[in-house]
Image 1 (tube, helix red, strand yellow):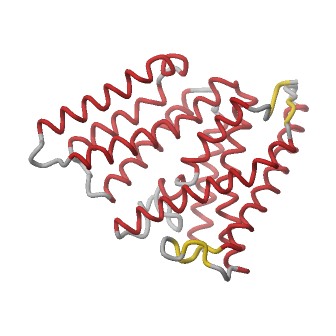
Image 2 (cartoon, helix red, strand yellow):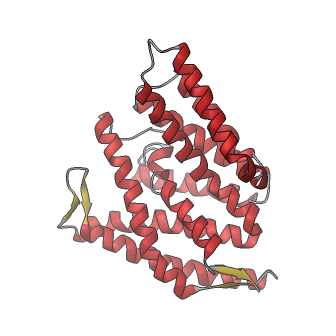
Image 3 (cartoon, one colour):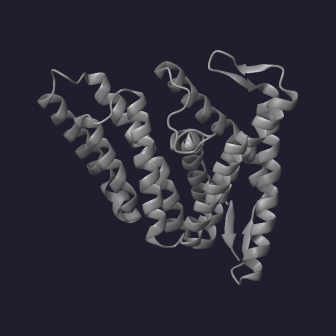
Length: 278
């Protein structure tokens, strides 16, 4: 528990620094670093460390956050085609050592991790500092508070297993407690952030009832991301994807639930009146 708390404090400090430079290239660099570390951890767990196709995939993932959002939207089909083309060329050159399903695995998860994490940059570039930053808060609160609430509620009240063959420690009571915790935290963050924006001269409106109505959906998607990572770890025969955060595991262990939540929140803000400048 002590290691877990210390790692959390260090992680929050790093997060604060990134948030302080949210409007700058620091955010792009931070997202690229998370992508590289997450892909490295996943490929190492899958036995693909330092192979030709894994190195190509990591390089591809690292450059995605640096594309201008508008440019990437127009060039997205070409970018994905080029990535697939290079992987297939590598398969042809190393067909004795590389199986086709390995190429598919690497392509699928590189696209997922790279573009999901880059949604943090999309939120800033499309919605601007004030709304984009709030959308990031909604994402992290929804994913991490669901996980934190589930952890403590599960320890205190957990009796019914949620998915015993996948993650024996997760319980139904913990999942419900996590969803309630996230909902309450979303309400507090929304009120606190709107007050901060008003006092700083950039007032925003937040559709609180819509946010609270969608909060359980965000929690459910967070749980699905977490359980999906648990399935992979169980199949790979590992406890954690990495050890960079003592008590928490690796970067992918910390962002497994965020990977599915961030694209969801991006689309919620894109198509629904979640928040607006006043």
